[in-house]
Length: 88
Image (cartoon, rainbow, N blue to C red; front, side):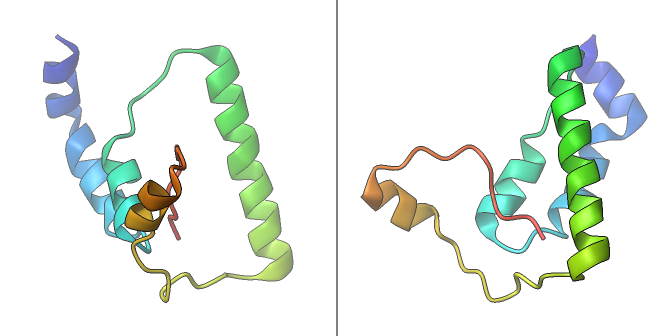
């Protein structure tokens, strides 16, 4: 049922559009793996992150990440577990 709803709403198309704005493969992967949440604390946290990012962009301007390369292999070598990518 939920998968059908995602399809009808064009959710995966939206993720695809979003992923094309990511600066590196890790960010693209993170974009494509996003899932909606109904957890109020997670929604509140994500909303605060968006607000903080908007304020930072307004104050400091856009930070280009176009030179960022795929760091996933380096993270794997370092044994680091990562949860967020480098969208930009």
